[in-house]
Length: 307
Image (cartoon, rainbow, N blue to C red; front, top):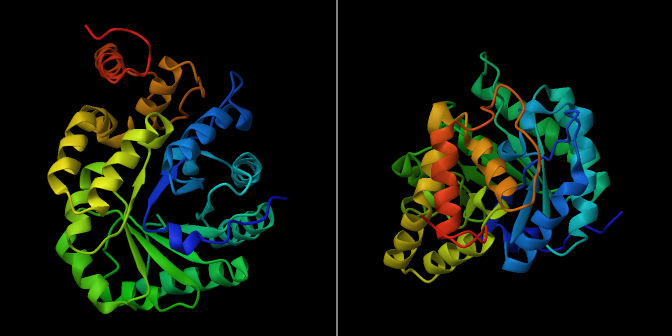
């Protein structure tokens, strides 16, 4: 088992790259297909890689598949950058996956926000406390896709021993600013809405951002991060404009093409990681595919000339 990377907390303000989960022709997971993606991201300078995030189709995997993916990712990363293991769903699934992620060599856990239709704010606090116990000392990063549980509950979540960071994935920068003000100053707040929302979230105190683009074009994500770290918002916004069509395509069909566009791009680049499981959209429509092919050609990622 690879040793966990020792500086996950130092890397949190960087880019948290969310890895896809490859599937084979029989709809089984095919972890070995991820190696070129990981090697490319590490070489480009991506700071952290995450297995079992939403770009990894976490909710489309069984818990056993998620356990296999975190072990495989740890082996392929081999300590070059920190690995974060995503955990979630039922409390027993989450705690089982927390233990498996620690055994695999993950340096931290990312706790998916419970999607249960009956979520009590104090119940979420209990949920995270139990995951922290199962993680047995691993730092926790909370993944908040909405702030509906309220700022008081978020403050209590951040006070749980072991919680080191929060991935804020809701387009409410002013509420983020207030959450940061209420929390322990040591808590690291990460922009959880990828590159396009990184500038406004950075402006109110987030550091770093999550990215699915790193599977395809990690160098561009690293350039955006460097511009924001230097306070050069004009450059960051110009770089984001270059890849905005990619993210617009991912947001179509109620975000149902989020992973589909990434996997279709990888296939066009000769790094086929298979299909997207339902309920995600697959394949892309003819219009979506044409737009994606045009962008990848413009970026020089497919060896084809742009039309």
